[in-house]
Length: 255
Image 1 (cartoon, rainbow, N blue to C red):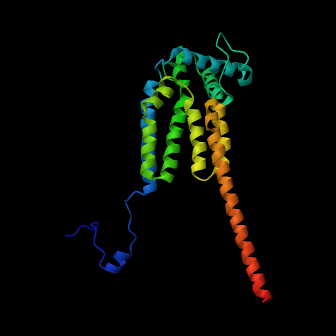
Image 2 (cartoon, rainbow, N blue to C red):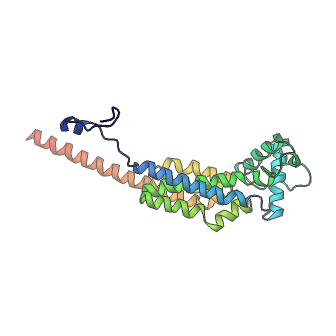
C-alpha cells in the first residue's frame, strides 16, 4: 500500500519540463566578493595577534602622545603644545588625525587596568593603519581586476594583505604609511582607469597623510597634460574634418 505523502512523478512531461529549475551555481561576482572577504578576514586574523607587540617603542610612544594630546587639546593646538614631554608633531593633518581619532576612543574607554588587554592603547593606536591595509587590498582587487582579470585582482589583494613589510609597518610598528599608500594608489588608479579628474584630489589626500606623496606629483601632472594634449589633437582633427566636409558640401551645392 502506497504512503499518502510519498512523492510521485508528474505524469505530464511537458508540464514537468516547464517548471522553473533552481540553480545551485554561485555567480562569479558573488564568488569573487566571497574570496575577497576571506582574504580580508585572513589579513585581519594575522594582524590582530601582532598588534600588542611593542614594535619600535620610541615611535609607538610618540604616536600615543600625539593621540592623547590631540584628543585633549584639539588637533590644531596639538601642533604647538603637547601633553607631557612628547615632541611636537611632524605629520600633516590627515596622518595626525588618525592618531587623534584613536586618542578620542582611548579617552572614552575605561582605564586600562579595568578593561584588560583588549582593546589596549597599544592595539588601538595601530588600528587606523591596519584598516587602511585592508582598504588597499580591496582597492587592488577592484583596480587590478578591472585592468587585468578578477583572478589577478584577488591575487594582488592577497599578496598585499600578507606581505611581510606591510604587516610589520602597520601591525607591529604602528605607522600610518598605509594611509599614504591607499590614497597614492587611488590617485594612480584614477589615471589608469581614465578618471583623471580624481587623481589630483586623491594625491592631495596622500600628501596630507605623509609628505612623501609629493613624489608622485610630477607623474600625475605629466599624465594629465599628456591626456589633455591628446584630447586637444583629437578635437582639432575632428574640427578639420568637419570643415572639410562643410566645404565639400558647399562646393557641390554651388555646382
